[in-house]
Image (cartoon, rainbow, N blue to C red; front, side):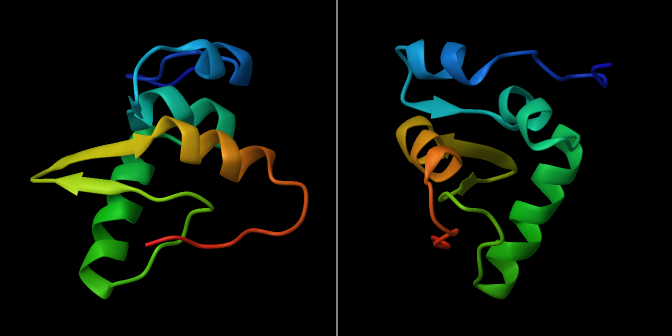
Length: 85
């Protein structure tokens, strides 16, 4: 069941998008978390100078953006998880 604000997209649908950036509501169902928790984690990571995800994240003011190609690469990478900043 989707939480408020989540957008149910499959990985294939994300791959087929013609946009360069994703938002937390689009990736949250694939990660099994709420968009809110992605936002909170990204903000905490930026404050500490780290990245807890297998893909880079961008914080613009209070908005979180995720580069689509990097998200796909991070989620489909066969071996391990290289963290990005």
